[in-house]
Length: 629
Ligand code: AMP
Image 1 (tube, protein in one colour):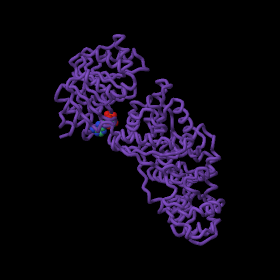
Image 2: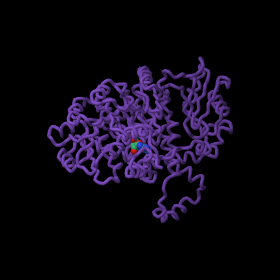
Image 3: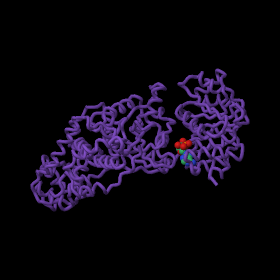
């Protein structure tokens, strides 16, 4: 027996939800559906967004409606237009196989006459935002005297938004004997007051502990200098090539500025804030929902009720003024059992606020390290490889060109073709990131685990066929520093960390200033030394958020990553951009001739930067996630 059928739901509903891919009820549905089906009762449910609460109240609600009548029998109140439309859509889907079902959305910013007409046609269920509903009541355009059930969804949000009086007005228009079902992510006193005033012995359901964040959300904070926030945001985005994020800002102006800077830097981004008209909001949301945008930059108020699945990251560009809002923000990710990340980009003075949030959500944050430019490069590279692997080939369209393409590439081995193909994009990442500074503020992070020892970063690693010993020898040889002064070496894919006695740190960084390895500039710097990167000086003041690394491979201009063309390698126009294509070729040639400026031991040169077997095995070590878009 189907699990929804087992809960007592009708065939028509079970069929519709099965078609939507619902296999088994979510925990909240397991509780609400039988409780509401089997009795005419009031209900108070503490439930986060994304738990399946719409079906939790929607399915039993539909079961109680007489769809042969045209009377309005159910009223659902919710805080925002987005949520209103979402609930309406969901209920329309659930009633797909029920004849005569008519569900109408009532919200501000759209024609009140059209909405009145919709209601007059006979809407058994009305989903409304409070402001517009009061308007309809004032104009006597809605009759709520037959309402059997009133649902208050996201009650805490409605009160936060100042709808208390409107709710009182609306509920006073409904019959005393109706049932009220209240859903809220938190239970502040005001919500409890509503439950006391309007309910009698409500069934109480908790889907999650009070104020506790969703377990599927990982909370991470990054400490950066205030001036590096924007660069940090971009670095985070670049290190997560499949990012689909909501970036929260405090003010409308900041929202707009960040979105504009992101767009200028080539990301698929846009802003959502109170100054937009309804039509503009709808347009932005449409683009976001369809994944044309990678990042939606929003204020708290504008983002309320946004119901988009698969948001991978919530980024708190600024911490919310009200700490409670943190729960609402982070609840936009990890919906429907999926995993998500909630990130806070903070400055050193805000660490205390993180501790307060931890206490409220009863979860610990992880302190993250903003990835280095090279780490971001690596992520982008593997993402590119994964996209190449998964791209759908249009055999019919490409067939005619294949003989010429084969002919053009006939003198290249398979390995060479792969390297060159990947390099057309990857070289640009490398170029772009080659002088990217460390963005982590040094507070709370140890420069080294031991006193008298300094930790250095070097942009050479496994991909250069170096291991601990060979890298140590190389550094010693170039700098003339005794091997014993290099106390520890940690070799990563494209970079390494080297711990050295503090007194030789400057000698090493100094002697490496113009050093090249396999024709690549070697960069070695003290971890946490933020002013050494040339990129910072070069780029400062470019965008409104200055200090940024300009992302030349950006999306809207046909590059890699964000933008409207995101997600499909085949759609890009990078070949058409002669500037970038030229740069790519130049880099290819450099790699191709394998000239080495370092003339030391043979072992340093065995893996040229153009990549050999070693480098390939390094690439294949990391499994990229399947693309989501
Ligand atoms: P909600 O909390 O109602 O906003 O639901 C979050 C998401 O979960 C929506 O996209 C629903 O379509 C989806 N959903 C709700 N119930 C189920 C279920 N039983 N199985 C799978 N997905 C569900």
